[in-house]
Amino acid sequence: MIAIIDYNAGNIQSVRFALNRLGIEPVLTSDAEQLLKAEKVIFPGVGEAGTAMKFLKEKNLDKLIPQLSQPVLGICLGLQLMCQHSEESNTDCLGIFPVMVKKFERVLKVPHVGWNNISKLKSSLFRDCSENSFVYYVHSYYAETGEHTIVETNYINSFSAALQKNNFYAVQFHPEKSSTVGEQILKNFLSL
Amino acid sequence: MLTKRIIPCLDIKDGRTVKGVNFLDLRDAGDPVELGKRYAEEGADELVFLDITATHEKRKTLIELVSRIALNLNIPFTVGGGISSVEDVSALLNAGADKISVNSAAVKRPELVSDIASRFGSQCVVVAVDAKNINGVWKVFLNGGRIETELHLEDWVKQLEKLGAGEILFTSMNHDGTKNGFACEELARISDMISIPVIASGGAGKPEHFLEAFTKGKADAALAASVFHFKEIEIKDLKSYLAQQQIPVRL
Image (cartoon, rainbow over all chains, first blue to last red; front, side):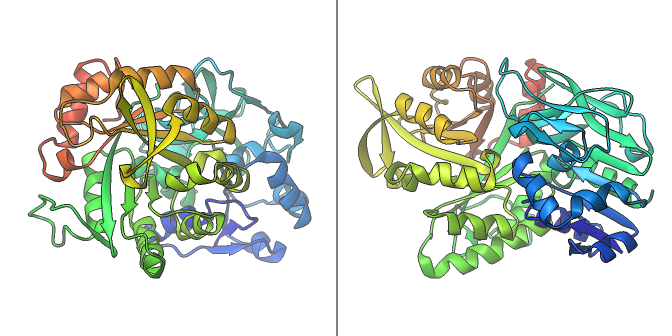
């Protein structure tokens, strides 16, 4: 059973439909028991970090998520919430990745919206994806690069397009909206 | 590198695509889902579905259609037409739309933009602005260009950015339908004025026009309808042309 964490986070339907296209019907839940026994957990998110953390706390998910032991995939805001701290509303996040989330300097247009390429691929999450593949982004905050960075994108500066630590994976872009490349990444996650 | 986006726009009436579409090989070219998928396969970066029925009774048809599109399409899409409340937006996003576009309702009630942005995030709020150059002044128009307002385009886009709009879809009524190119000078002016992306619309006739919209017009994306529907321009050919001209595009 593939679970999608349901906590008022916006793009849950898009993620669900993307899994449907791969022939999988996920369970949308915030129930601890269901999440603990899922084979894989997807942690999506669109919106604002402070509000999202509040929702997670209300459902006690802030304690549960870091304890999950199966493969977990954070998407977009999900990635940022899995980091240490976000400059967005000065929010303490889940701290799974010891990484800071910063706001893009407005040297170019912010938010970073559209298709950009991923480089320095180094994880089985990107099996059969080629260097410089295009993925779809919509975000104003980014995770810095560091030892847990498994792929990078450059916009204004280099940032973590994806992070990994143990069983925790997270992508800043939207695989559910990234055409065939995104489908490949989701398939790779599902076959971890 | 962030690429420039090419966005076909599909007009929808009662759940069907409207404009005569030249896709003879599609089983049902009137089906927005089939047509949308075809455009995605051909390299479209996003799609806009504009519901021109937008009567209250037909909303349900639209919501069902949006779900079907979301289930079948693997690129982002925007839904517009007749959106006038946070509830309308909520229903469309829940059905799976990535972004919504508001136009007249935002002019009548600017706080609608901030209400949507604070509830669902700026990333999903595209504000469509129809404007016409009248004796050197760009005035904003309502209801598909039928009603002139006192708003000046440049003031309006600055206000929209402050209200929390995520992107501006600017249609020049002077250029729309002419196939003589986009309103590049004005595009560049508003693009420099605000820090959110600007989508050029109105006037696309040949590939060179898209190039100009991105270079002279400083647009982040370009939208067109009939040149794609009638296959006067193939998206694949357009994108290879732009790549040859050093415009970053997703190939």
